[in-house]
Image (cartoon, rainbow, N blue to C red):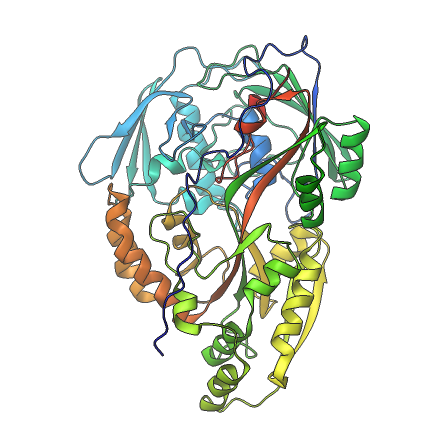
Length: 532
């Protein structure tokens, strides 16, 4: 079925903040008073996930924001741009033309906060440990291409890769490659609880109520040696149950800044209020939301069922009615603004259509209504998730083709466990980029052992197209392959992309450096802010 491709404007300056600086940016501050930050993130220790701040387990944006401030990586993403720069390393680079051998030299005098020297053996230990533990819901996939790590000296590390990977420097900038103390962290098990022993720009003391984090206090690490310039001495991160309570705390002066996750109505209210005492920071984002399927589940195993769903979903109405245009409709797994994006889903399915969906089901001889349960996590992605799924339910049930029921799961850890065990037929997920490259929106989701464990393996993607792009240092040259991959996804539908989000933070008038705290990569750079 040929349809004209919908052309959506690319995000200009994907990683560049959109608001001008406010106040002083020299970091002189006000004598070192703590900067208090609010978030609705939920970090908890459970029986199945006992180590929320161990890089071998942690694989969500909120835990990573804690780890980025406390553990070092060899590389890091700078304020702007997508090319990583040295962090714990003094220099790094490929030493061959096939992108299979990567060598780094460490900075002199690196130390963990307990006084232990950080050497190449700790880097090797950290990668080997990640591969040994292989936590099934952790970020091990980011480093599982490492064949072996050599340490020619205490300051040199050499990574030998199983196959070419031009994005490996970016992966070394993620907490999946965080360097932990080989004398503290267990070699073959998780570091349970809420302790973090690192060498990053801050030390952290975590307070928790029961098994859930309530506050984290970050204190500037005087022994830190790296590329980050810390603009404050102390940051207190307070964890709220909801965004309404967080906003009240900001307006009362109990916190100075709030970040994640703001409700759409709050964002619109703050945009329209023009409150001289509160500043809203917004940047384009690469966060995406999508429906995923266990393709072996009988209720969705027939591709025609998933195609009919794709034909019925009205993304524009959802973004308007649920998210008040604080996001954009998404017609591909690769978001707008990244090399290789194409609107494959609009090209194939066009505008929502009940007759077109009915025809798909009739041609496949599928009886209607199709009974189906959509499962979602009630609190991990913000307070609007329930409304989003009620809207999706209404859209899918129109015309009598589907009989969709909803199931909300309160615990994120329970949701992830049951999802990876294949207990859900169709469910809602979000993805925050590990690194700003199209590969990170394709490679984790397709093939055996993918992050969804959804029993979908696209042979052409995994055996030919992805390997062909992996070793290509010129990422512009990967466009045709990534566009073909997205067309395959639109045909097979192991996932249905729904919308693409933006990044927001709100601060009081005395906070400087807010414009550098966020970018589309979802890194929250709280070391950039000061009281001015």
